[in-house]
Image 1 (tube, rainbow, N blue to C red):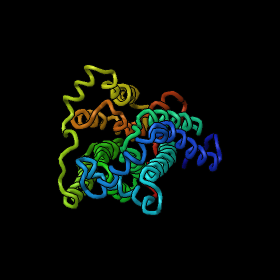
Image 2 (image 1 turned 90 degrees about the horizontal axis):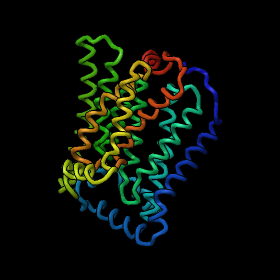
Image 3 (image 1 turned 45 degrees about the vertical axis):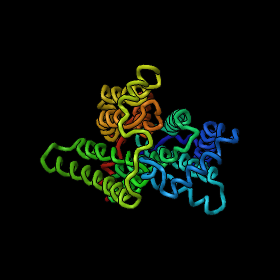
Length: 329
């Protein structure tokens, strides 16, 4: 049973918070293509046409939800650019609502949640590029949805969200190690406990991988737009620019903070921190680390980790609703 908390806003106030905050973020980052004639529809429409014609390179062609979702409002009469803006806006609103839902069991009151959401929106605003990068907000929505399903031990829903998320971006596969560590946390380390946790992690990996293989079968393989391997690019960034080191304060520093305060953190956040080394290594190999939009999904569980420490005095027994959810199921 969720403990009583101080209500900062009524339900309608939170809904307004989600919509207004998302609008501010969207306009701030998209005002450049909105106000410059060459960067709106003239840039996005040809990109979308190539995606729908199955003629863009990897990995963008494989992220089918990222261009199929905007195609819906486009067919209803919106321009391509406005369609992508609408999808990005609705995803940002949904991000806020899902993050609030995910964090609620761990926080004392709604004021803490408001601080966390403002921090997330500010970093999200800084990470968003005014270019066709439509997969990232959709990816965050599905990853946070997976964490909520895992938090509530709603495993069928978890597998469904993994499958849908893999239609957009394969990054959802990082839910697999989080699930492994989370399902093992607090259990007696028996052979059965290890097998159950490993079985779910492998199943999540197979679901995501199976979806990607199905996409490859449908659209065919594509040459990568730049290169699959980004190690040399990342090393050059780290040598020439401070932007190449952004993963340290964004990912590694919160990871170390969670490890140093292990007993004070909820089980899902602990599991997340054990996944982060795998996340950093994989992203250093195949993504441009300076574009920290790809690391925004980690903030879903590192921001509440900081809030748990910044606002002490919570009831540790109420930090994780999984036991209650498990007993209800």
